[in-house]
Image 1: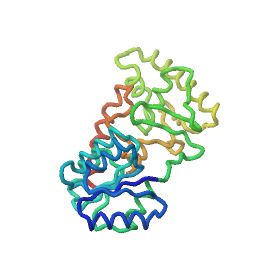
Image 2: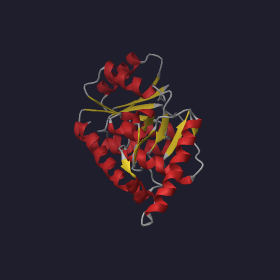
Image 3: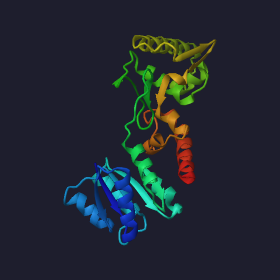
Length: 270
């Protein structure tokens, strides 16, 4: 693993280097006093860091500008800001950086950041994996789930978006906006529900859909969902949000606005 340490103050850079070294003795550490030097190492020398620990207050190109340039050149590089100025938190998280450490630095702080950043995301066994950020997608054991009807997927997306018991009318208004033929809408909805249950039963998921009289809902405990993890404050899900949510469905725009507001609140708290 390659790690860049960046700080224009020699003593603090040395402290950062030793904290990283103490936390992970096996890593390769490159020290830089200027952002331009670190960027040059990436673009000209071809040294691609796995993680960058950088001060924000740097002469010339500051840490925020550097983060943008690194993301453009080495999109998989993770960035952690190390600074004494907490007022930068909002702007930093708007750049979708991966961590934020306040000075004074110690090895335990660095170790916690490294443990989080290097621990791969693990799908919860026995649960459907749902991706709401960007385009809506659903997976089982790493493979996309295919439905017999195109709108079955949209029905499931709507139920996940609402995460509550919905009436047939609410679902019909979203999926067939403007259609006043209530009987036809209910017939189509029954066909979609049949397809949904058959598809889920084929992969062994039998308890996701909840039917109560004329209402329909889902059991959220059957899902491993980025949107739900976001609402619980999971930092990985927060960083995964890039301003897009179920983008193929127009009815999801209201939730997108709420997510954007919540994203700003998370940034302010951090």
